[in-house]
Amino acid sequence: MLARRACCSGFQAGLGLPIRATPPRQGGPRRPLQRSHVAIERRRAECYKGFMKPAGNPLLGSPAHVPVYVAQGDGPYANTRRALEPVGLLPVRGKRVLLKPNVGRVASGGSGIVTHSEVVAAAIDAFREAGAEVAVGESPIVGVDLQEAFAAAGLALVAAERGCPLVDMDRRHFVAVPVPEGQVIHELKVCPEVLEFDFLVSIPVMKMHMHTGASLAVKNMKGCLWRRSKVELHMLPAIEASEDKPLDVAIADVASVLRPHLAIVDGTVGMEGLGPSAGRARPLDAVVVSADAFAADAVACRLMGTAAESIPHLRLGAERGYGLIDLGRLAVTPDHWRDFVSPFAPPPASLAIEFPNITVLDRNSCSACQSTLLLFLTRYRERIFDYFPSRQTLDIAIGKGHADLPEGALLVGNCTSPHCGRGIFVPGCPPVGSQILDALSASSPGVNWGQS
Image (cartoon, rainbow, N blue to C red):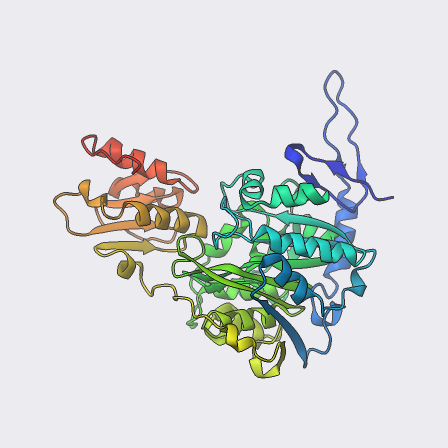
């Protein structure tokens, strides 16, 4: 018999595997219910046999003829329902479906930062009408309160209206999943729900990305990694005799074992420029659906005015055979889908272009610190030199990979702590903008930073 346990803050976790209660301690409260590690490992083993391989995806037809569906112009809910309509959802009847949107940050729907709540609502309705049990799950970036993120994005309301569980995928212990084909990653700490549900659906936002070129359905699977283990992908050493960045190779490694059964790319409002969170919102009013996440990403890239072949993790994954990005081998509906193309501004080649006289020294930073810094600079770049009246340039460092840093730099985040004596150190993982302000104000009490 399947059992469920309710978690605090309105979240529900632990769906689908038997659970056992730990006997109460003498004189103390009953300890929380815990899952049998044997049951978890058995389910992990069952899932891993061909986990996410194309042959194991009942929603995917012939790998040589992959359909992709695009809907545009009717708003997030209608576009999603229309794009899902041709997808044969019969295999999900009686199964359990986990929807994985991009809600890793606290932001409102329509901001281009998080998945639009009405896209998720449409997916919930479509899968339930097909006879599936549906839940929505996320593992946010470090430091984000998931309950707050769900509420800000409008997903808490959507889920409450439908009685759909919201799953905090970081609440339980990870499952170690081997990566036999990995080049820089050989084992992943995966949130257990990813392995327990029968179907996994990636619902990302259509974004440009400072470090990976684009962030779509394939990269969204990074949000299935447990807690801080996501950050480890940003800390990898350079690959000898390779021009590929280790982060891009790592994302391709993740795709070798974590590929969704279905991708629903939310292009209602995307993000151009300084994605994933400090760019400009870009309305497109489109949704892309495919059972091949690489194919969905390839079409989404074209809609954004770029090519999947120029996005390293997509190129690497396609070269390994994890999916198709060759538009000539995709059956895209409708035939006139290219009419919807609306080029997004690409991410700048260097932050020094976006922020004159400021050099960002970024070595192996994660997106949490990147976002904090970019948002801070966007708001305060005109005033930051009030603190440095005798200087024309400023070095700001983020990330863990620095061998040395220039004297007088602004050091943002715990990863720069080995060099804290070189300049102004702002602790935190990540620090927030107010902490950077506090550090600068403490070093220069005469400067009024304010909040305007």
